[in-house]
Image (cartoon, rainbow, N blue to C red; front, side, top):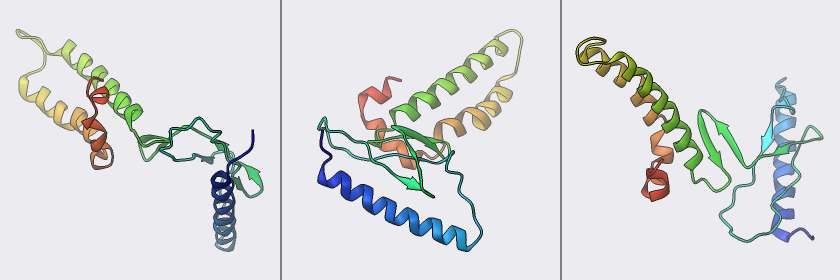
Length: 145
C-alpha cells in the first residue's frame, strides 16, 4: 500500500522539528529518553488508510501509539476522551464502593466525614482537567459510562 502525500508531509515536518528540538536540547545539555518517548498521529479522518508515520528522535524510531496518558489525561488519536472518562468513572466507582462499606445508618463514618472524603477524593478525580475533556460529555456514549 502506498503512503499518502499528507502522511509523508506530516512525517517530514515532524522529523524536521524534532531534530531542531534535539539540537536545542543538546545545546542546553538536556537528554530525552527515546525509549520512553512515543508518537501519536492525531486525525479526525474516517478513511481506512494507513496511519503510520515514522518519527525519529536522536535517530531512533519512536513507537506510535493510538492513545497516550499526558499529565493525567488519557488522549486518543481523535481526542474523543472516552477512554479518560471511563478510567475516571471506574476509579471513582471503586472509591465510592469502598466508602459505602464504611457508611452504614446505625454505625460507621458520620455524614460530615463522608462529605469531606467525597469533596477531597472523589470530586478532584472527576473534575481533574475537566475544561479539556468536558465537551466529550455531550455524547450519550460517554454519559453512560
